[in-house]
Each structure stands twice: as structure tokens, then as C-alpha cells.
Length: 130
Image (tube, rainbow, N blue to C red):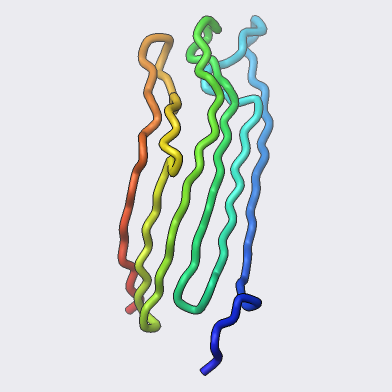
């Protein structure tokens, strides 16, 4: 059996930076279209049984409708996860969305139907292979 040492940590990083512009025929900016957005995620396997994940999501400000009068502000949200494997077939996973409890507006359906982002969200799951 190999003993774990700090030099055996494996890391993985993924990132996406989409950019988009969308206009109607009369040069109005279309609603719900981010000009800039970003998502980064880092995963670290600390041992054969434990791992962590940290993610950052950025969304640029957006218009709520084609009237272009109401703007949802940009936001940055941090998410995290912990993993614990036991045996060869089971993994316990705890996900936390909005780790820093940031207040933000996630989306809108017109100028007066604006949806706030969720506060801390926790999800605990047990995954089994069979």
C-alpha cells in the first residue's frame, strides 16, 4: 500500500470565456445576452479518498427586455464541493452553490419579473457503482 504524501496532489483546471453581442434590426441590444461571461473550475485530488473543487462564475450585466431600460447588474459567484470515496464503489459528495452568499439577480422575464439568485444551496449525495 502506498502512503499519501502532499507531493501526490493532482490538479485539474478548466476555464471558459465566451463573448457575444446580439442586436435586433433597429440596433437594440437583445435581452438576456451577456457580452462577457466567465467560468473557471479547479479540482484537486488530495488522496485516493478525498478531493475538493472550487468554481467561480462571472456574468456580465444584461438588459431584461428589448426596451433596453432595465439592466441586471453583473455578478460573480463562488461554488465549492468536497468529495470522499470509501471502498471502491462509493463516493460521498457535498456541493455548496453560492459559497459566499452573494446577493445577485439570476435572470429576468421582462422589466418587472426579475428573479433573484439563490442564497447558499447545499446538496449532499451518495454515488454508488454497481
